[in-house]
Image (tube, rainbow, N blue to C red; front, side):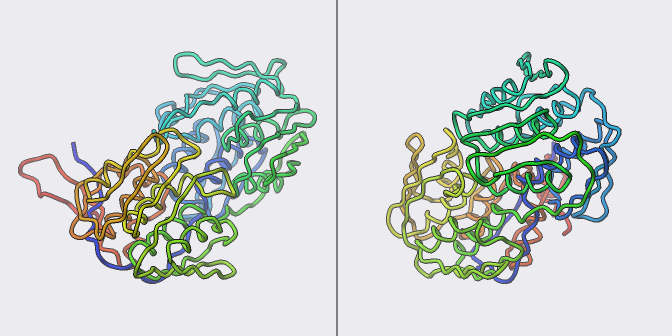
Length: 436
């Protein structure tokens, strides 16, 4: 079986400009949300990644007409959708498939989904999702790996939901279930991430009445129906942060365009603590790497705190910072699997439960490594860009779940990186480089 991966020759500072794509975490909520719309949704700035491709396939299986206007603009017409079994082989591969619980309950009064897939970095229970659906009048059960839900009288009803733990996924799912419900729904202790605000703005542009997104109390007033419209996805905070860290780690200078600087403040502030220069513009940030990186401590928290999705990338930067840095993971139980890969590259990194202790080294060295998950995979790319010699990264399908044209964008910044096949045949070339 052929294996697909990246080959990187490190040591070149990144220089130039990069344009950030639409936010993955917003887009994967909007596609299920389109099921609630009686008409055509045109979504602009849609990231061209495997997660969005899979979700578009799933809604197509439910009867939606999906048409790409161009690479980043898609029309989704859900006028004639109906409840039916979805392609569960795809749903098992993507975490955001659980948004179909709320969207299908809102549209059909019934749903059947798999347990969430995607990256594996600890338990991600959906108890808060279930709590919200039950509060809005659904019966929910989990049987043989499937989540079954049905509205008790065929329609969801507004209610008050207090989330025991801040949960982005549960907040989004409850919003989706409540938009067409009768009456008012209040979500307390709601997550505040930018993509939740973006989803609310998307729904409101289609006729919904969602108020308070971006605060810890969200109110949804149910409406009879949603109409079609056009909406553009916000820029991706985590993609932007990844290039910011890559520029800093390689000692480069990169102008990162099409961003919302306010969404990047927690990342910018932490980079400045390492000595990195970060200059903010209206819709761009300029990052200049420092000749000597300083240690710092990081604790991941819900927005507006430091995002857990930037934790692995920041760890790579700190492997080359003077002194000892400490990273505390405040969201997930097991998000340090990549530490074993960094050890192969000469990092001095030690994990104790939810704490990672990093002592800076002078250089990393290239090695064969694995992408353990989406963001850990991006971190290994950054490590390869900084390392002396060649780094080979496998399991890069995780990376392509969330980064559009990652190899192409890095090449345009001067990186020596190629996507390659590694054939498992004695008579085949050792590597086959993929064009582009």
